[in-house]
Amino acid sequence: MAYDLEEQEQLATLKAVWNQYGNLVTWILIAALSAYAAWTGWNTYQSKQSAQASQLYEELQKSLLSNDDTKVQRAANDLRDKFSRTAYAAMSALSAAKSAFDAGNLSVAKSQLQWVIDSSATEEYKSMAKIRLAGIAIDEKNFDVAMKLLSGDFSKEFQAEVLDRKGDVYIAQNKMADAKTAYQAAIEKMNDKSPARQLLQIKLDALGSTDTKVDGK
Image 1 (cartoon, helix red, strand yellow):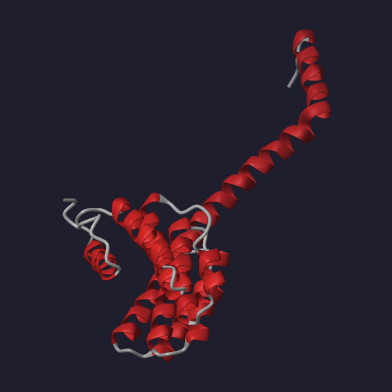
Image 2 (cartoon, one colour):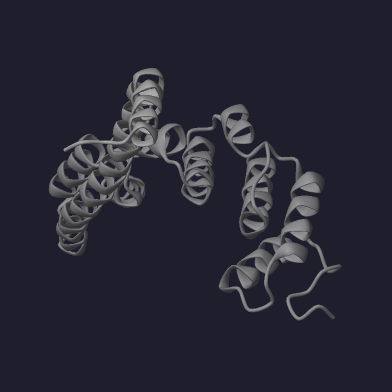
C-alpha cells in the first residue's frame, strides 16, 4: 500500500516513538495485567481457602460437642498449619484452648492461646487470648505474667473483663483494696445487662463493698 509524504512522516514519527517508549509501555501493560491476574487469583485462592477452612472448623465443632479433645487439637493444628491466614485458625485455637483446659492439659491450652496472641491478625481474638491466658497464669500463681498479659491497650468491649481479671490477681495476692478498686471500675465499664455484672457484684459484696450495686442504686 502506498503512502503519501505526510502519512510517511506520521509513520516515521510513530515508529520513533515506539522505539523509544514501546518497551516501557509493554512492560507497564504486562505489569498491570499481571497485577490484575494476581489479584483475581488471590481472591479465588482466598475463597477456596476459606471454604476448606470452614469445613475443617465445622469438624472441630463436632469434636467439641463430643468432648473429643484429641480430635479437637488435631483439627485446630491442621487449621493453624494450612489456613493460618483465615479467621478460622484463630477461632479454632481459642476453642482448642478451652477444650485442652477442660481436659486438664494446661500446656496445650497455653500453647493454643499464645499462638493466637502471636499470629492472629484480629485484635479481638488477641484480646480474648490474653485474658484467658492470664486466667491460667493466675491459677498457676504466675501473677507477674498475668498482669503483663493484662497490661497495654484493650478495646472498649474488653476493658471491663480486663479489670475483672486484674481484680482476681489482687485477690490471689491478698491485696483486697486493689481488688475492690478493680472490680468497681469493671462494673462501671460493664453493660447493665451483662450476665457477668451480677458475678462482679457478688465479688464486691464478698469483699464488704456496698458502694456499687448492680442496679446502680
